[in-house]
Length: 161
Image (cartoon, rainbow, N blue to C red; front, side, top):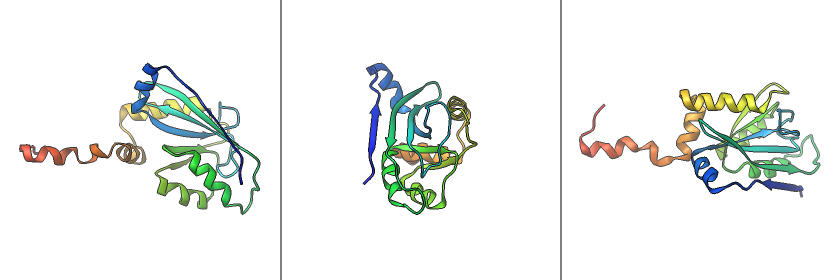
């Protein structure tokens, strides 16, 4: 049984409303400043809500010590903790973890150790403003399935390309 501790940040209603369109993104970090954790061995994840203009730390999830090699059970708790996230940034990740994250709609993204979180957040915001990459567009579409068939709704009205 793995130990887990969650810190969920409460915000004012105006901020919550603006974050309703944000994507949830997790970062494997021990210091809340940079990527410094392997996914499977991560001691904690910082989960941020990010949209094109704003970003907010939503919660931090910490895990107790777990056996490293061959302990696939540790992945279940980590994947469950990332519920609602579209991506997780980490410095390394095994193929087993990748295979288990994807069915949950979570894109694993490997970055260099010590990459600052604020740099990754700004890059995501730029991408949201300028047009998302394929994986991010799919994640946004999964988050808003009604937008996927918005053109089908227009067809009876005589809409054409």
